[in-house]
Length: 322
Image 1 (cartoon, rainbow, N blue to C red):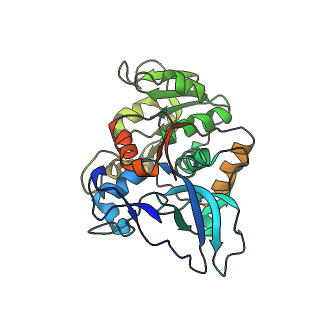
Image 2 (image 1 turned 30 degrees about the horizontal axis):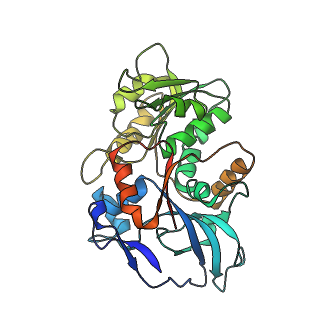
């Protein structure tokens, strides 16, 4: 089968289209014929091996799984002997490690049936980013109607879902994005938009009940100044920071500080759970959320798709089609 493979950590130049053996599902796995694969920062982290602490899970010297990709949507080709949840022919989406390939194996607990009203490309744009936004706006961060929510990085993969979900919950949403992204962010449900090149999140009288920070660059004191005295900050992702910890160092500081202040400061490490995938499926089928796909790339151009992710700010998700 064809797959995007990398043999070492580094730049997108290392991503190569190759012929490799088709994976064989274990008794507890599902083999999926991939039709589309989502692309987000998680693919970039796997490619570069940064932050270095992530290599404990990814592989110390080189990627443990050389095939790129996490999100996938496609048709079930075969199921293991102990799998009863799916059958060949089912259209599914979820976490398929190694999804930049014609086939990938997945755990049944990380798959659900594809929303009937979505294309494979739209479904592939949902799992990691959608689940991250869903878990970010949970617990104390679940906004009540009328509360003020600030989403930083509102035009990105996680941010666009966070805006949609917060608006669905009845919050007054302000999205932070770069030049040219205002119309897109408003289309996701934001009542207000801030262009970070023309202002700061602490400008003006507003203090937010919930802040979801997807951008990973603002210092913790700046975020806290924009947060209400009893508000909740959710730091998503691990951009910037040191080579070893990356942006995780900022999230760690937030967690350690939280018990000492009135604000609730959280660092989110999202985990793919079937119940969350099912929630996303239901929301998509009911028209409550819509996966915005910025552009698609054929499998052979996956490296260029990653370069596009690195260069700028895709509006919504990038998707690789197989």
